[in-house]
Length: 436
Ligand code: DGY
View 1 (cartoon, helix red, strand yellow):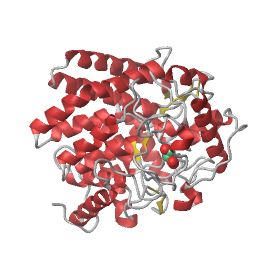
View 2 (tube, helix red, strand yellow; view 1 turned 180 degrees about the vertical axis):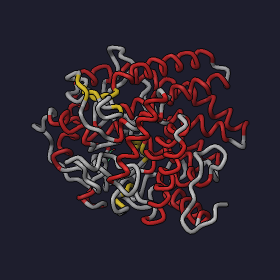
View 3 (cartoon, protein in one colour; view 1 turned 120 degrees about the vertical axis):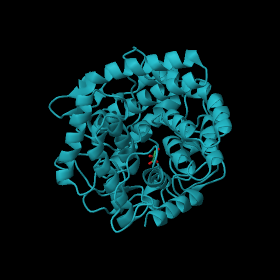
View 4 (cartoon, protein in one colour; view 1 turned 45 degrees about the horizontal axis):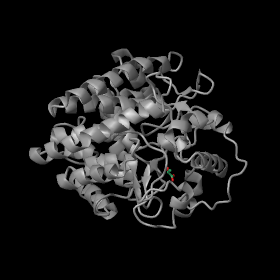
């Protein structure tokens, strides 16, 4: 069974490989997405290291001059996606979107580097990427933390990657819909509308895009102009982890300035993260920067904080919180608390379980010594694959496959869980199979 799953995962990656970049899945997402790509490279590294490095190189070949790495790169025309390049109108030679996504690339690069069999190649590629990764991280703190709080805000729900999370509901209501140009959604032609965000949410997503476009995508203006500014602990944990990983990498590659600056950003971020802790919920919460208040929504974003180094008692509390979620869900980790009214087991980020999130939380909890919970998260992840294949996400109640099929990053995470006996989290006992 283990070997068959590994083989299937490799086939999914090959199927979605477009040579120098990978699409998340055919149809629904026909271009290169930022964090999909970064996490997918981890999968390629198990059978083709050169291809893994190329994935990251392609992503950074489209970095903006100000340091931002966009969330979508429109390598080819495809009318099957909305909003396409004409809506974004970012005036790039190869069109891109104008917002960013969770900066997980430096974490990936460090992991590729640490595991590389071809050390010469790894040194060369990592060294070339180092200043680009650092420029992106610096851009975040400049453009998305203008007052120097130590934490960055997202200015569009799409930046979080958790597009329709309950976390954004109230903040999103402050985004108007007047003046939104008429549009036809394409996502619901590829995926079940019951698994996707609502029309009302899409109208607000597009209002934000139009507003940023009217400001010429000038990142010195977008943060303050956005009525939506949310500090997401999960997003910030990814950035903090990436800064810390980049610091270690820079030490190894003899770049002391990048190492020192990156470590400083990670330390400031970690200290500021503590302002997002909720004793009542036993986890971190989002902060609405426009009101200055924590958002009372116990989502997986606050658990993903464990991906960065957090105090041991916080990690233990997050582990207990996941245990509790497991009393209401058959499959860890639901993206929202199943006991709340807003929970929807099928609708994108309002309940479904996602393997990439499971992977990052498991990785953080392992470092924090929570290995029993890590084993459980990984075992549930593999059960989801065994039951429902390589879906985009899954009902944490029934394991029903949701969203797109043959999904690249899901396949990459399966390779990480099953094919990394030395550096991955500890392996689960697969049902009815002997572990190799
Ligand atoms: C989508 O199109 O659903 C994406 O999540 C936006 O990046």
